[in-house]
Length: 295
Image (cartoon, rainbow, N blue to C red; front, side, top):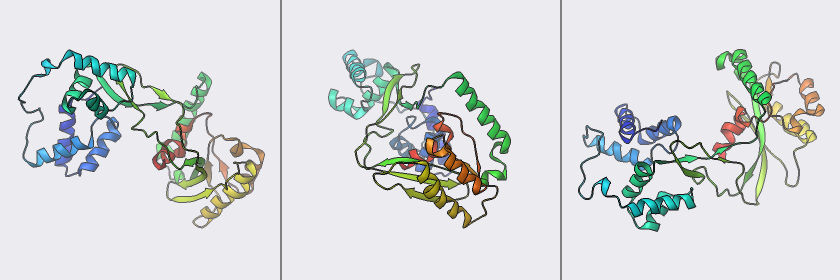
């Protein structure tokens, strides 16, 4: 369901009365409704309006031509620009057609019924059996750890490796496209990046950060490196704070994570390996939370 401007203003007013800051209000709205629901400028503007004593949420009466007077040629021109480039920004539309920001917003939202959404990354097309494995795994984890309330969650250490590029031109905001309100979200498979990059393995627990290990240039992630160098450093860091008995390690199904050498090393250290369903990066904290924030 798309929120109206008045509904968004009511929620901004609620946060204003709770004495939250503008940034806290913006973060809360984006976390709940997505980055495209409201802009930073809108939140700051309405905080200022409320501080001046404004007590209603409707637009003030405006002089000039009414909405019904929006020129049909402008509507068609905006429609054509969006069809040519779904990633086009409001500023680019305004500059191209030499129209104001308010008129651009009215045409996009009220006349064309468009909204800006972010492409959803689809890593792999899952079979029905793989989808069921994901469901079963999640239900098992919820039961085993009491929905996250069990103290055993503090025994879990999780980690993964990833390339970190010197420069990534395709940000989340840049990948947003205009779609009609009843259209499905578009997807994307990969992003173009610069040539310069480094591979890092990052591990952490619920209670604290563990370690970052950099893979030397020119080398690849192998079972020997993962078991003898990476995991060795990780477990040594854990032992500074607790014993290894009862420790649970969680990582995805990358080849180096599942070969005999890695499994044997974990057995010798009395560390239990947690399961993980195939092709499920959204169920690993690194892929679904940490890496996107860092990158």
